[in-house]
Length: 332
Image (cartoon, rainbow, N blue to C red; front, side, top):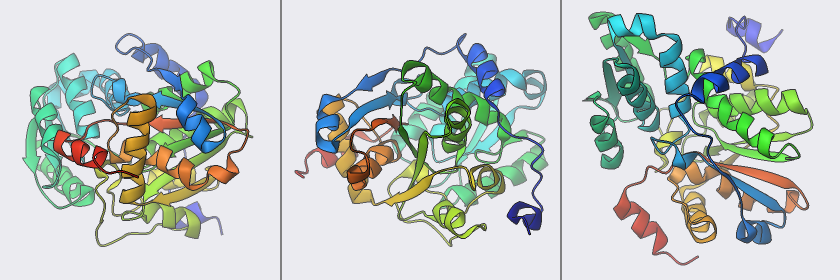
């Protein structure tokens, strides 16, 4: 029996390259393309040609802003009436808050208690209302959904909301436009929106391009789900990578990634912190834990990358300065 049919999933909506191109034409009104930077240092250490996609240079220092702007543009008539509420570990919240400030929409955000002050401050500066609830994303999301039902807000699920995907996928469209000969792309894997965009864009251009998703060892639910062919949930998470701290796999990303993504790897917090140092030393860029996950994974499997052209997605740079200083002070 087909695994998705057995789960009762509705697969009538799929992300297509046509939708990504449409999203790119909308987003070019509000965002500049982020740089795709060749790194001699990373290339030398990894034994291949390495480019880093600097999504940390977006207005909210994360790739998520692409999805927020596209969503708000498409839903503007409705959400100006209702306002919106969402839940996030920080970067998705900033994307919705930024889009809300751009289009004049009232935004409420539920964040777990351990989200860093740097992300809270950024959300507040964008004019969103912050509500603190739960210990990880999934608890915050359940609470946000209950508030939406009570207050009449439009609820934006950070992971299952398909209208976020076309906007997010535009970062990969930019990569393939600039580097059409790319062989392997490493993309962090929290809820899955970035990896869905990767599979859609690169596989449409050339099915031989390999897509590698990267999860935190302390939050491996989607990794386990893709390996086992069924949805897996954990009781909690144990990682400093806020953007990857998801305790369960969600239906929509799982349905779009299963059988399409080429590989999924796990990296430890230690490996991500080593990658944060590598990105700073070789590219002079600031990465948060989740933003460094792609680079961490590439070092883990560098023997597979010989003579390849590799793109590493640096998806976010929202990290507390004290934590960043601590990480940089360590000598590998």
